[in-house]
Length: 263
Ligand code: R5P
Image (cartoon, rainbow, N blue to C red; front, top):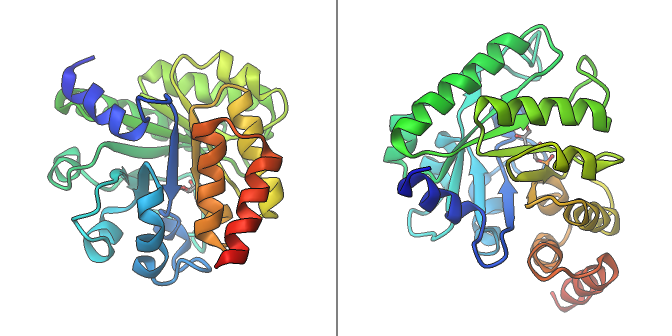
């Protein structure tokens, strides 16, 4: 692995702990103005100082994020579908690696839809991105999409999708927590970060964070469970406490409640 790629990776996964709190704010790429992310700048800027990396599209980066923020950025470069369209799995690459370099991204991300009609198309797109990324020292994060039409959200399916992403050459895999998650992590030879999924209680989201880390995940790439909370900053701080300080969920939840009250 060349120096540039390793340097970029270390801006996503913090070398001190080998872990990462990524803030996922890319939802608009197919969902439009998602609840509490209607005005991207308002949601993202106050949270940015607490995230190791921010995952978003180039459009939101250019329009809504101050270039002076010191966090690293992972650009979502797949898309071309919408929630009102026919098939969410019919994605392609929408942003070039050159543009990602120009925007000083530390990584590029795309979704793969294993088990869908467009499985082959999305896996070949991942391969293309890895080929291009490798030329330029740009790490690739593969997101294993989930959905009704795809395989069951269980460890066999997740392990299959994550392993395929790693075999194609993804440097980081983002997936969803499930039972027997340690088996998913064990059989994936590159770091895994866990998506938060739909909004649940803060207590449950912190449990999910803890269970993911305990099973061997390198961190979270969490969105709605942070910025759809009534107290997003206390929430991201509580998530950090687990990811970077190995706090138990109870301790992190106590911190969340304390910070939320102070606010
Ligand atoms: C899904 O592919 C989106 O790219 C989000 O980044 C992802 O779902 C993580 O966000 P959340 O924690 O809200 O699920």
